[in-house]
Image (cartoon, rainbow, N blue to C red; front, top):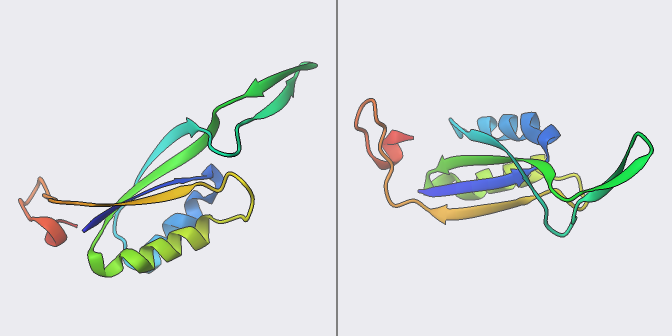
Length: 112
């Protein structure tokens, strides 16, 4: 099993959720986060004053995926989240040692 963590633009959430659902990823967790990478923020005008926005709003999506679905899930997520502009985000894939469904006690792939 793998844990996929993606940082994406907020307006891409529905497209990413639909793309993952189509390939059989049954659940995701979404968190509102702020950060920056190469984009390094931007400047905005408010009431005539210019100020720097260093941390940009993003969404962090986490989902556990069986080994057999990792490549398909990664491809679907990247395709759905891409705009082609700087600031599209990143995806991190990590190994999961153990998963337990609390309600039933099911383990690993059965718990997904």
